[in-house]
Length: 434
Image (cartoon, rainbow, N blue to C red; front, side, top):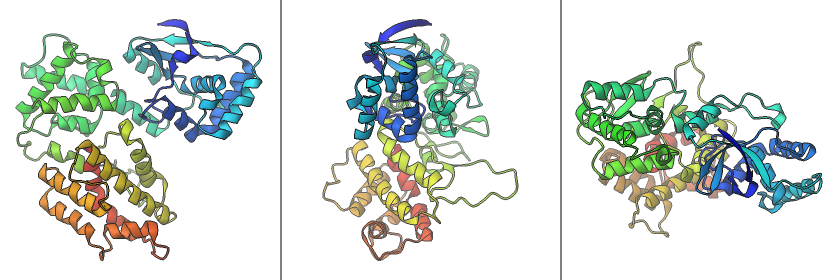
């Protein structure tokens, strides 16, 4: 640990801040901080100007010639916008920070005292022990459930089962454990999401490790991962966020390392786990209440990378915020948007040359579904269900979705929306996970 005064221009507001999940760049991260808690940000900026100092040094780690802020992103953002008000995301905020800057007493600081940690695992240990007070936005804000979940998914910390320990036991029993010590924290980080675990042939259910592919093929894949980590071929920097984890797993897939043989009898096939959402824990206080939102309260196994930030925001509005009984029109429009974004995501990620820009959405979806079926991601029966969406006369059709958006006389039915989700949910998941 070291405290250093670093140029403000060398600090980078973290695009992978656990407050919001992974975003494309610093500009997007700044905009998201204001979109989610503008009043807190304004209060913090006023406090910085009134006191003329940052009371708690930001926690940073080096990346090249810059330093990414792990903790203290709100403070750093306010200082950056006081230094350059035109970087604020709206004209109103630009004026706000310009007026505040004029109130700064004395010379505006060009450097900031920071706590510099080179070990990113130590950074996560520090983050794990912080965030206990809000203080109206001036202090550190408490992490809500989504933020805590972002942290657990990104790092594998605090998730209950020590997956690395279990994997080591299985490899040792099979005489396949590398001779060098495996960094357990890195193993837990890499396999922190169920979707990634499934691709390697394992699953965590009811706090236990299970094989969902043939055991020897899965053990060979896990041995390769353990060896890469032990030999430092793959380091913490290579698996820091969801995008880099996917890149590594995809590379193993291209090399033929991932298990592809028949699944274990009675287990859910790894190729299908993305299609089978895990149910939320049952309530212990009597009969559970009916879920009031469009998307059921289930874990669909999607790894929300930075490129899926907009998709995730829409998904969570449909799953946790907008109620069918109160907001059917808003839900219908967002569902239509999610269809198009998901289809386009699949087209780009799979480089589908058969899909043309001028194709109607229904035709695009059909071409995407055909590709999914060819690659074994869905079966022929489900392909038929998606193809039927092209038929305009049915209530469960793309035409219905288009009418939700464009027709002034079309009545939105919560029951129709539920039926549409029931038909499209698997399609969405495949689009966003491949």
